[in-house]
Length: 265
Image (cartoon, rainbow, N blue to C red; front, side, top):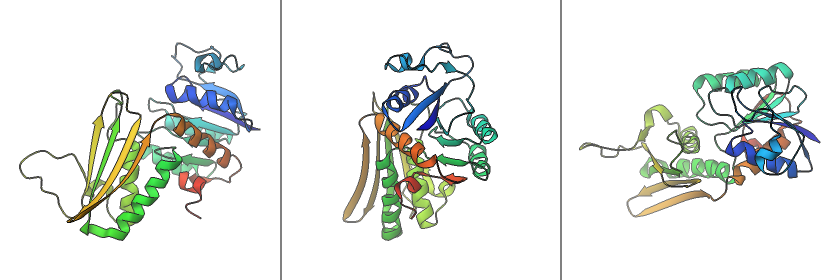
């Protein structure tokens, strides 16, 4: 059995991670963690997740006897989580979005001593979309305009989504573009004609939309679209649990979902 700790266990994603971990005969939930001021500390996390008593209380401290920590915590605590996992030599799966350059530097450094996997989106389908978008962009070249549109629920606080940025980064890696210079976020004004080679980025916030991402490639006479639609948050949970199982016996290093899917083989 792979011993798993869920960080951010009382959140929407965390509760589903708890629920589906409890149903997985290859995983054992040994810890559930939240911020120190959380009002549900001490509560059995199974009750929070709606699956009955699991014998694991919500705490504010990461256990040191786990094989893998799955981190979906919010609030800018990623670097603290990384440091704790390095100290206890515990593998770490990071699904938290809105990471900073400093967070990514910490992930790179941690990869020198532990197995650490980070992805802007844990969906297996989305990670295949990254690879396909990169391949299409490389094959079609700058004769085809590229636009990325993402849509999420009205409560999402960051924009664009980490997944949309992941699509853009995959395209940039494949085509030699710079995500900070070649991506245009929205358009407004009288002089906003598209420039050759730029990547358009647009964010929609609609009702309870879980997540829709479309990347369009268009030229004079035709258009190609690649779309991923998430209809349940469980798709991200299944991906994270698959990543945790894959990572548990890997040597130190920084990994991504393409490694889990065998796309880097």
